Amino acid sequence: MKKIAMFVFAIMLCTASLYAQKPKTIDYAGRIGAPTVDEPAVLTKIFSNLGPATAAYAGSAWLLTGPLSASGGSQFIAMPFTPKQNAHVSQVRAAVQYNASGANQVNLSLYSDASGAPGTLLAGPVTVKNLPTFYTCCKTANASFPAVAVTAGTQYWIVADTPTTGTGSDLEGVWCFVPPTKILVGADENSGGWFNFASGSNEPAGAAYGSIP
Image 1 (cartoon, rainbow, N blue to C red):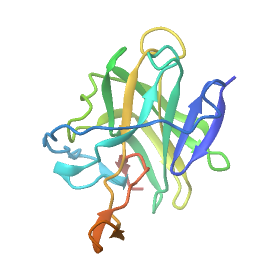
Image 2: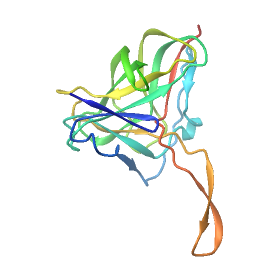
Image 3: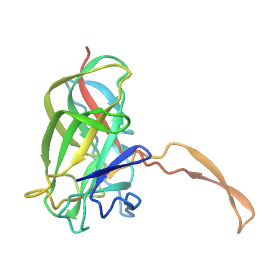
Image 4: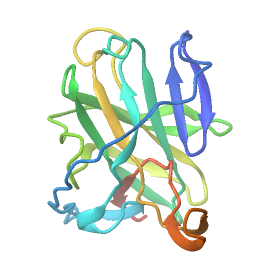
C-alpha cells in the first residue's frame, strides 16, 4: 500500500522503503536550449506558474521515478493549483523530462483535493510519450482530456506518475522546478563584502488550460 508524504509544494507518492526519506531532487549543470513553450491557440489559461517562454522552468527538479526504475522505488509528484474563477479544464501541462533510463513516458492526471493531497481522480491518466530530455528547455509534457468543471477558489492537483507494472513502470524522469524569483542577501565571509543570490524554489512547474466558464 502506498503512503503519502507532504513536502513544500509537492506530493511524493512512494513505496514504504522510501517513505522515511526526504524527496529526491537533481540538478544539472549543462547548457540550456531555448525552444519556446507553445500556447494552445483555442484554449484559455486557467493556471500557470511557468516562467517566460524561453526560460519556463529551472534546471533543478524533483526526481520522478516508477516502482521498477533503476532508482529502486517510485517517487510520484503532484502540483496543486487553484483557479481564480469557475472554469473547465481540458489540458494540463507539466515540466516533466526524461532522465535517460526506462520507458520515455509518464502518466498525467487531474485530481480533486482531499485535505491538502490528491483526492478523487477527475481526468486521466493520459500517457504522454517522447518527453524532452533533461536538461533542455522549454517544452512541456501535455495531456488533453474531456473538459472537467473546476470551481473558483478550490484547490486541484496535476499528478505525474507511472503504472505499477508493465511499460512505463521503469521511468527515470524529473519534474522541473519553477524558476527562482526571490532575491536574498548573504554575507561573503572571505572578502568581507555582501553579495546577492537567488533563493531556491521547490515548486513543480506546470499549467492548466481550458475554457471559462
